[in-house]
Image (cartoon, rainbow, N blue to C red; front, side, top):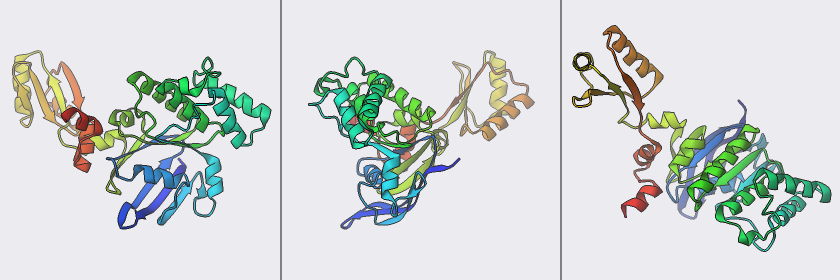
Length: 315
């Protein structure tokens, strides 16, 4: 699969403060790539560099097949950016915001208005298209913001904290829209502090901490980095439960519920090995469940910091 974004040795400092310390990223076309990290880890700086808003100090960067240093205009023509803070003009209607973006993209009067109406329909904003954007709810403003990003039909979209401040329903609505964009061939680089968001959306995840990439992989690969995964085996027969305890001496037994917890990283190889041991011993297992650590566990393990959600709930 071709790379939509290919970055090597990206560095950025502000005075004596090193913000990005030689990071490497490869984002495949038509996928969602999530960049996670604590506040100040360098996520927004990375997005600003990749979207040509600020210059890197060092590193090779190719976006949509173009060298960012040599041809920034070609990169800008291929990308769309939705920042942390809405770019919506509250004194214009939703449709006028979209037409304004169409004019900036030089689409022409007729084509620009057609594109605006098309996006209002796509983002379920037709009924609100004639109303001032200042009257929109948070979720509606975020949908309009994303629609404005898409006016020029970018092949790559940078979404910097796209659902911050949204209620759960609006967040799920935004997730659906992002998935639909990717299904249509768009590549998305997403920064977020919501671990569930990355888990739900991302094909691959990179975790930044103090400007360094400390972990990278699929959500499942990252979860296997953290100890605590296990296979839960439930039995209906006390005799089978007792026999299984002898066959699997490293398992943690729960006599009351006839359950064994077998340490396991959840990989196909280790699961296959466990099933072979069960089959060789002719054990009658009533139920098998795989339990792996979640991304919150991964985040804490690789950064030493709790997630934003945990910080709020423990104060």
